[in-house]
Image (cartoon, rainbow, N blue to C red; front, side):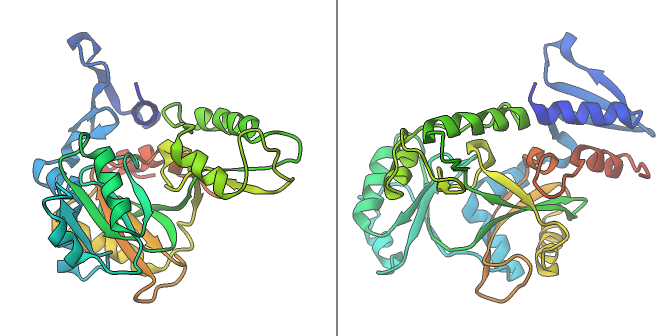
Length: 320
């Protein structure tokens, strides 16, 4: 049973909501919640009443999501979908801008898997495609924009929590090696969520090399050592709460998207140069998650949120 699912059950019991487990039916991570004449089915930490196939398709296909952003005039990076680099090279070249930096990822990817950043040449893009073409049918080539990774969690179509996600890093103490510091950070991550991790992969080794470090190096006291390019919680990122600091424009984007699609429970990923202000050309919406992982809001630095309790209070109309 994943930790998010456990949090929902714990919150339901705290709020005196009846919990009917479906273990006897062979559904280990499924429960029915009943309260105030309402029933909610929860599977693997997801509320089934909040999901439908149309929105699942709309959000899992990142290019389709951008069609909604276009209708709502929400800024977003320009992108191109392709399946075969060699056969679609003409279209790729037409989209390509010399001097620009790109990111490429599986069209329906999750948890940062398969995301390649800082692509500046067609040769790099072809190398990426050669490595990943057996693992995905379609890819999204997207202009890379700079800024902080902002995650916005919507409940009932309105902002419930916001955090900046920083790619995994360690802080030197002048005594321990990079390898030892990574292991210590792993222990903290596992306590927060056992499903999260820091893998020693090619991108991590590349980043260390760029910082002129190895696994045996001993960073200076206070020295930040970046471990990942992607600010994904499953890959060891840190979450810093900014709910009370973000500019109202970002909350408005959530409400616009909710009104347009009918979605009430979802998360919006944004890249913003400064989340406390908003100016055109400084923030871009990236994608929407209709089955959001919100556990990081429960251990975010600065402020934490009882997301499970907030969702249940809204769904069952319980006054806090």
